[in-house]
Image (cartoon, rainbow, N blue to C red; front, side, top):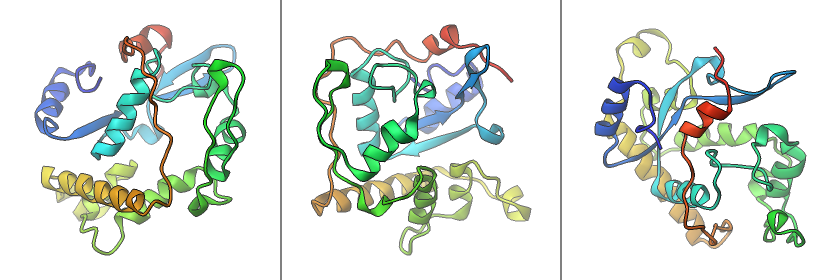
Length: 218
C-alpha cells in the first residue's frame, strides 16, 4: 500500500516515480506493547525511516500473504493477531529455524511441515539481518557501500556519507542480485518455502486501518 498511503505528499509522489518499475517497501513504523496502554505505533529504531527495494520473489510472497488474511500487517500470528502479543522466538522462529512437523487440528492453527534451515542452526533471528549484509558484501555482488548502509538503517560516516547518494541504478543492482541469489538457491532444490495457496476474494484493508486501531507515538 506504499507509497499511496504515505501522508507526505512530496515523498509519495517522488517514490511513485522512482519505484514505478521496482518493488519497494517503506520502513515507517514498529509496533510496541506499552504497559497499561497496549500496542502503539512508533518510529523505527533510531528513527531510521527508509525505503527498501525488494526482489520480485519477495514481493510475490508479501502480496500472497496480504491476500490470505484481512489484517493490515503482512505477518500475523496463527490466529490473525499482531505478533507483538506472542512469544515469537519460541512459537515461531524456532520451528521455522529448526523445522517442525505438520500441525493439524483447528483450522486457524494448521500449518504444513516445516523443513529445518540448516544454515541458521542455533542462531537468533537477528542473524538474518547480519546475513543479509554479508550477502550484499559477497564478491561479485558489486553493490556500493552507500547503497548497503542505509538499507540496514545505518548512516554512512565521514565525507563519503555527505557527498554520496543512492542512485536508482544501485537499487536496480540490489534487486537483480538478490533475485539471482534466490533463483540459484531454490534451483538447487535444497529448500523451498511453503507458499500461501488459499486466498480469499477480499483483500487486506490497507495501512489506513493501522492508524485507526493503534495510536502513533513519538
